[in-house]
Length: 255
Image 1 (cartoon, helix red, strand yellow):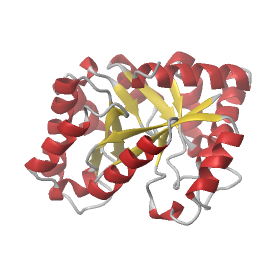
Image 2 (cartoon, rainbow, N blue to C red):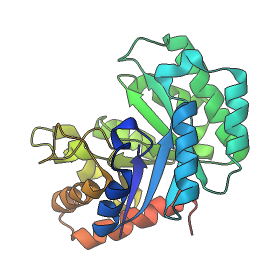
Image 3 (cartoon, rainbow, N blue to C red):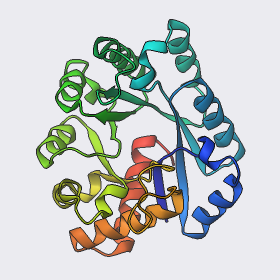
């Protein structure tokens, strides 16, 4: 039993063969998935998929790249959606200093607003971080995000940063990069993070694991992430699968 904690089945890349993609995931033992919405169209699609399939859940948030487009009514909409029975988290949210569409100050403001909303509605948060680690950690501390905790999605930081995030009540989620031969940091992180604080994800259709690197990613491949973590930690695949699923159910409040 596996839990892919971060999928974008709401992406255009799955428009043609979504049913087959979901079937392949189920055949590989992926029992649960969280479809992550990050703007109006993807949020609507995430909700409709979660309503259609009992094993799919949704997360709703505003992506930092599009922070400049977020209006007050969008935040109110997120508040309303947080009460939906299949919405299990807010996000993805955070900071992205790689793309320059949204100024840093606006990204930070929108990030803070979403953390405050999460604390208000009592949902965990899913963090997107690209080239903004120190600011992310600082904002999480200042906003006391540890009160709700959440997930460092597709974690790419150092073992030291991972420890800081663990101390703030966050789980570390690893995806395809942990399987890349030259990916030193994700492997070190997999080694040092306790199994009861690890999650697995694909972030599909992006970041496909080895040997599919460069191709479209899909939830079935999350098994390869679990297998790699098992190898790194010297554990059985079954142990990693069982524990990461238990962790995901715990953070998302799924019985």
